[in-house]
Amino acid sequence: MEKTLKKENFNSLITGLKDKGYKTIAPKKDNNLITLCEIQEADEIHFDHIQTNNSIKEYFLPKTEKILSYTIEKTKVSIEEPEGFAVKSVVFGARPCDAASLPIMDKVFNWDCTDKFWIERREAITVVTIACDKCDSYCFCTSVGLAPDSKKGSDVLLTKISDDEYLVETETEKGEGLIKELETVFSEPPSGTPDRQVATVEKKFEIDKVKPWLDENFVHKIWAEFSKKCIGCGVCTFVCPTCHCFDIVDECTMAKGDRVKNWDGCQFKMFTLHTSGHNPRSTQDQRWRQRIMHKFKYYVEKFDNILCVGCGRCSRSCPADMNISEMLEIIATDEGQPEPVSSDEGQPVSKE
Amino acid sequence: MDNIYTPYLMNISDVTDEAPGVRTFRLNFQNENEGKNFKFQTGQFALYSAFGYGESTFCIASSPTRKDYVECTFRQAGRVTNALSELNVGDTIGFRGPYGNVFPIEEWEGKNLVFIAGGIALPPLRSVIWNCLDLRDKYKNITIVYGAKTVADLVYKHELKEWTARDDVNLVTAVDPGGETPDWTGKVGFVPTVVEETAPDSKDTIAIVCGPPIMIKFTLPVLEKLGFKQDKVYTTLENRMKCGLGKCGRCNIGCTYICKEGPVFTAEEVSKMPDEF
Image 1 (cartoon, each protein chain N blue to C red):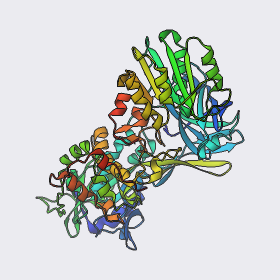
Image 2: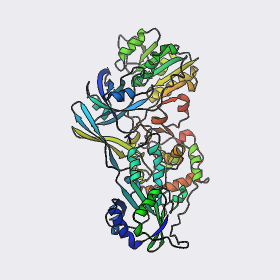
Image 3: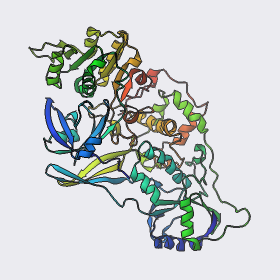
């Protein structure tokens, strides 16, 4: 379904969503950060940015979430299942790259057995994205098979067609339902071909060349070179819309407690530390290799998808200025491929 | 929709102290129906929880041939295992599982079996040892080589006696040099050396090895020297795990998720994995 939406109707759209019982999440400026967060009024929405600082991920996989509660009474324990965690919401104005992360992550959360916390939120949340009309040097969606106006994962995609008007395209039944619910705020599609204002994101590397290189070079001096600057802060994993690794811990008083799932990250030493003290990924270069391998090799082999949408957040947020697309460029280009080293030379350098 | 993170509630019905800091729990389902419907196969693992402290991953140490209960053996080492060891008979613990793949014991029928374990790694093998002993007719010679640091560190001491007394089991126990007591009658030496001395015949034989990484590393070449083909040698791997369901993202070695594709692998499969142990 195609419609248009005038900027002046954003107010009625957000009010309409509220009236229909939706919680609205949208980009909002807070000091120097542009954050996807809950808003009440259309005025709060920030439009003129490249990318939000946080990704869409936390609305589907919260930073911390209760997966069960329990009461301990002497020797007995009773368990209570969490309820009401999936709230009917609309994420409005996220970027297409963020939306594309959702169907990619559906695969791991549905694999073999279903994580209901992910799936029920996926069902409850409608995703309305706005195509990017500008980008920066960190953006690389076009290198990972996406585009600034990709529809993958979006229920509705808005594309700017003039200073005060957006083209509205629905991608799913859920998106169509949403537009029908709020019919009055939308106008009929324009006649003729609208002038879509979409950024041009430079293609930085051939993704097809990345995996074959990774297949051959688990042991390679490049891992130590790449990770030299890494301070292991893990911010790349937290801002990433596709990093989904988590921890499970108990939070408890004497009698009552919750078991919670928290974001975790492969860049932390504790992530793989055995109780014995042994650690299969004890150095930062092993941990950085894991991040690249997981995204561009392991996930592809398991789920036939790259675990990266090219949003560039990991590089934009890195305090040590590590740049993942530059590394992938090195990996993907023949000239940049150093000769594989002997296994001794390629062994991770100790940097615990 | 079911919550895949919800554990079964189990009663601790028996507690055995195996060695300093090592304890075995026998667990029974609090809900009879859950108990009736519960099935597992030897080699699988589970997540055990001390409510208020969290979950910890260990193998199921009992054999599926012993119905109505499961057993786990753990060493007090971290937050959860310390909390577990505070629990007594009648207390409740959480149990999530069974997870992972299994020892293909049906494929092993008609063959000799050699079990090789080091230290706290006997529990996963104890499950498959009892499983095969409970189906004793289906297997030929059964040899068990078990070593620990010291005599006190040997686990399942009562069962070691039982296996020694049986004439259909050849049990070789060993302790590391310096770990012996004056009345120790077993061998003194490290597991790989003891395996070499015991020299089990590799013809028509399956070897099952479990122990700390360093023990496995030095035992595999010994087995190769004895003529064991890599696809006839099995091991069970462990890594830190949180979900046990292939989602939390940490137990992989290369592409292989220990929780889903493992924990049981052949030495051949292990040799193809990248060096990330």
